Length: 205
Image (cartoon, rainbow, N blue to C red; front, side, top):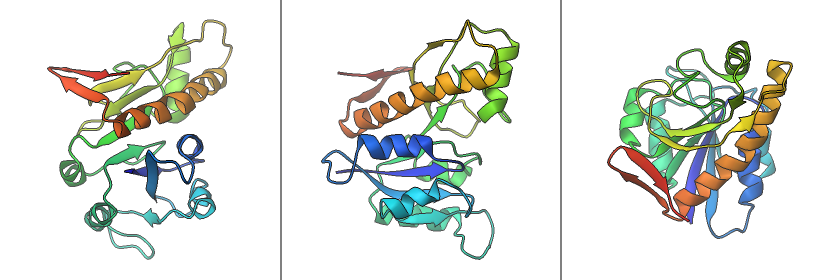
């Protein structure tokens, strides 16, 4: 069984997409832990619904929270193979990235390397795409390194936004594709069908 940990900060629609694609009893992927920086995160309800361990993480000492080193130890105990950032709005500490080098991925709601970097998340991204009058957008899944939205791109999928009238319309179109692409990529990791050759990432059938 391929075990993953999912980091969330909001509603958790991408987390739900993963759990729906790999329901309890499947033989490929198990969500072994759900992590958030917020105790009031709506996505945490899914932890109770699916009986998944939940952790709240912070850089300092705070009641009910653990530190990133403590979290790393817990994830290792759970034999976590992949960390998935699914709408997580905090920068991952460099020490944590070192411990899970090449094992952390993120989904970004635009076609990187455009519209990435600090402050470019959620509706901020879709507003920027709209204001540039882009004709296409779409999600990017990439490895996480120590620079915002900088890691190697694993997968992208485009969506036609030439007829949209608002950033909200872009957000809705892109989110629908996110819900398809993220479980697909997680499944490919579980099947050991993602390979890095030279400077590129390849997904095999």
